[in-house]
Length: 434
Image 1 (cartoon, one colour):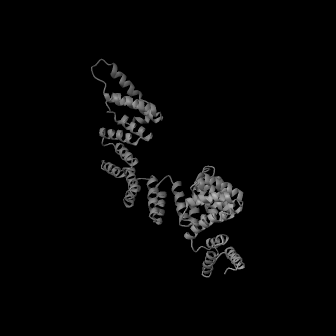
Image 2 (spheres, one colour):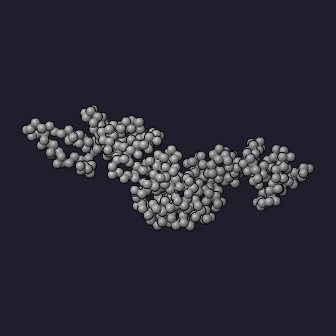
Image 3 (cartoon, one colour):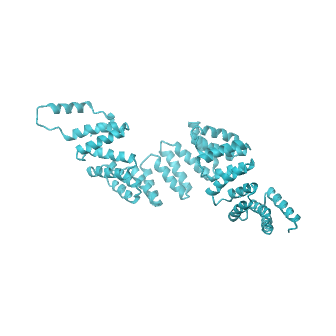
């Protein structure tokens, strides 16, 4: 049967002419029902592909009543429309009706399985996709890919991997390669992930996304030269490709070239103006250049786009401390502490800000938490001792200084920390404490 959808929803002239002739000839022959249904399906198809969904739904309801719910195409499209509205259970009902009219049609089976997947019934979806594989002469990569996605949702990693490998063998589409590489990264089998990305570059036509992910993976394993090479491939085709520009700017940034990095980030900002990573990195570059006001502005924008990013809040708090904005620093550092409770750095910075605000009780509570996370960190120890001394807890302060002294004998301690500890020790000796 010819695929009349190539006519973009317009009923072929020959079909109209034949229908008119059959309607007017002086015979008792009845016009076949299939022709009437076909004509109505063309009208329905026309409205559907033009995204006139309300008209399509109205026509379908009338057609289903008229055909006693025996129009497969109308039933199928009704399932699609319900899914677009987020009514997955209703869409599943219509796909099942469509399947009962034509159980050998792959699209009916796939849509039932997809609905089950969206409903979270992944095990049942796998069974349906497996039924689809029994359809004769079927070699559909999407079925294996979808089975792999279902197994991923069920955390059956090995089964997911097996089906995704099969999917890559049947297609030059990039999607199963990317998902398979994601599994290898999750399993920390990075060499297999790299090999999968390289295989995609050989077999697939759409490559920029794969190149970008391969470049990011090289960054993950600290192979900066290969990462730079991969991103350079993208930029050689399009010098303003934002994703690649972001990565190149980051590579330049970690090589301590903030001025050049900022220029690259600005180019990337044309398409990623609401990316918190972008503004965070620009802020860090300005911080490294000691342009603190510009750094604060960029970091505040990054925090606005992602208030839960503890690293951004922590850096912003640090810069605010450097500019003596202790109250503002405390606010952002509280946010950083909430988002990253296992990191001692925002706790340490917050204790410093609270000390500057004369909230010594709060500072001691915070530095105690930092000490519990990093009991041998010299910066934590010296600040803990300073706060304890300020609260007249001299015995505990001396004990902390003793710990710091023991650590300094087996590892190097930054000069400013050693100097602060010596000043505190002299101060306590003047008070007659030893």
